[in-house]
Length: 342
Image: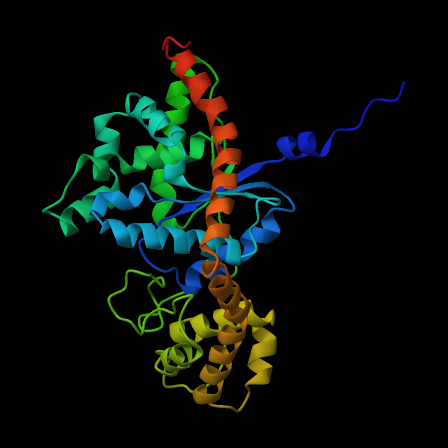
């Protein structure tokens, strides 16, 4: 008898799993979009994708409650506006699933104090917020590990600044597996190439960051066309007035990378297109390309935000699907650690 083919659900289960969460504390930048977000929907064709709003992480800086609720809803709407849907991914809000906090405590008990205290981000944030160095800030990386390990993620899209956190998650998983038996998948970094290092428009040797105090340094995903044009007009370049990709031309290299991401053109093609033309023309073209790239996202975001009932329904559906996956891991970890289950 011919062997039965795998069902769609079995095929999906067999695929490698990718997980990424984003905090709702501020609007993401063009760098976030070109480096990661834009590819998330397409990744669902090849991977079992899980995306979420990390609102629990935001509590370490004591945000205003009404503001956090609004920003969490907006960030969830942004994920959907990227083309993520519950039929091609799992999209959820972290605090809607108690399992994250449950696993966080179990992993805290498998994390050494020295490991947590060595985290670079903890040192930086503790220095920046000396009046609020809370335990949540200290155990933030362990909650991040719980976010990853609870879904048995194979890959986590990260930037260079998050490699240390992913390494801690791997260390915790290996320690737990060694103590209690195979429980967690060891996650690997998933780092993109072109567009993964979009730089500041004012300091092109630094990454474009949503926390940059200079408003002209980054482009927000919700900036108006007028704001985008203005920011690119003031972008730092050099005195050569020649559009070419070369060492030492950090500002132009950054603008060419952005233009390439938005148009699909190679650097050589861009150089030919702007041969003999000044930086003013090039900046205007980059700004126009960015405006057109973001237009569908912004329109869909505004449409979704006008339907709060739909957003709640989608969030509930996402939480239900994520909870089914999370519960398997939490139950298994609790049993392995010897907790009495009924």
